[in-house]
Amino acid sequence: MSSNKESFARTLIFVFIVCLVCAALVSFSAVSLKPLQKANKLLDQHTKILEAAGLSDKAGKKAASINAAFDKYIVPKFVDLNTGEYTTGDHETYDERSDARNPEKSTKPKNDIAGINRRADKAAIYLVKNDEGQIDTVVLPIVGMGLWDIMYGYIGLEADLNTVKSVVYYDLKETPGLGAEVQNPKWKALWKGKKMYDEQGNVAIKIVKGGAKPDDVHGVDALSGATLTSRGVEHTIRFWLSDEGYGRFIAKHRGKLTDGGLD
Image 1 (spheres, helix red, strand yellow):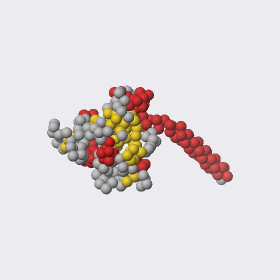
Image 2 (cartoon, helix red, strand yellow):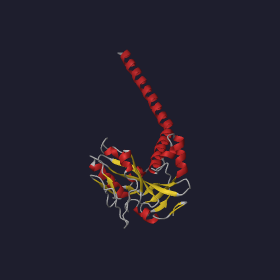
Image 3 (cartoon, helix red, strand yellow):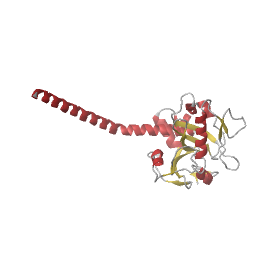
Image 4 (tube, helix red, strand yellow):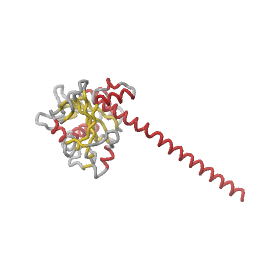
């Protein structure tokens, strides 16, 4: 009987030691890998912003060239969405998703057509320089509900803050072959040159089921078989270009692009 108790005690001690060692290894791995994880997350962000800016060809495929292109062409800024004015922030550490969940740092939209529940009070935007050092594009983050979950992306607008350069989605859970076709290069190419606002300054962009007419400067073909995802994209963009999103910022700065940025 005593031998069994000693054997059981030794087993417990062994299990306890193994658990301690495993916990220590997991903790060490988490701490040691954190800088790498942060670097990879930032690299992915830079890649998508450069794509939205139309600069993927200048960025290349390697991490060093991507980061170098970002530093050369991209000027991160922060905007207070409630006023449309610039504010402060660090794009490398800013977490829009965290702010959106914090009632002290976010606002509940009056017309939540994007289905996001709360919108962070400030946003990181990206001014894009050309080779002459002039700002010719602005990349704006967008977020809104698709069919299954929230979708995250960027929209690139030309210097007039109206003409679309690109729409890039990078984080979504839509159905492959249907809603996930928002990432299809052929569909993304349909956005280039479209106008977000009409002549009166109203948000006019729309997703057209059955296909937009060739002369429709505000219409983009809907995704085949993905009506709800298409509707989600339209609602997301219309939300973010309204006064609920970047509307105040765009109204203040439209037509004021300068060599140094937006006045």
